[in-house]
Length: 113
Image (tube, rainbow, N blue to C red; front, side, top):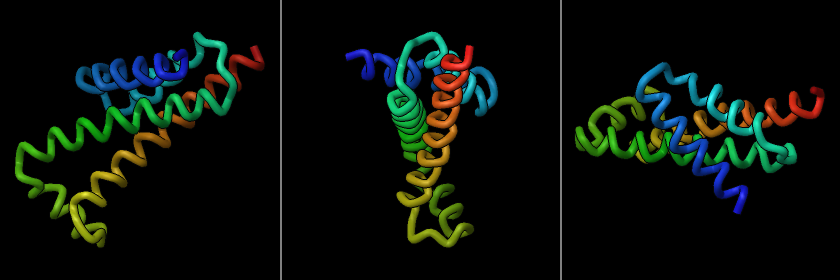
């Protein structure tokens, strides 16, 4: 239950923070949420990974459906990807890695301090 709460907190707060500030606020949010909790490193990484990945996936799908997948289809061509779903998946994976590594860093900093 606590794990699910962490994932949802990171997803909602990072989506809101990204809406107002820059994209890299996802790292700050994941770090802050996991920095205030006593979680193991693996749980921290998965919480950040899934929270930010879910957030970025939902935002990418929402923004992409507004223009009938034209922009993501063209960007997939630029990166030699087979189609727009691959581009959206890679986008979500990059965000998820940033969130997961940030949450993992918070867990290790909490151990040191």
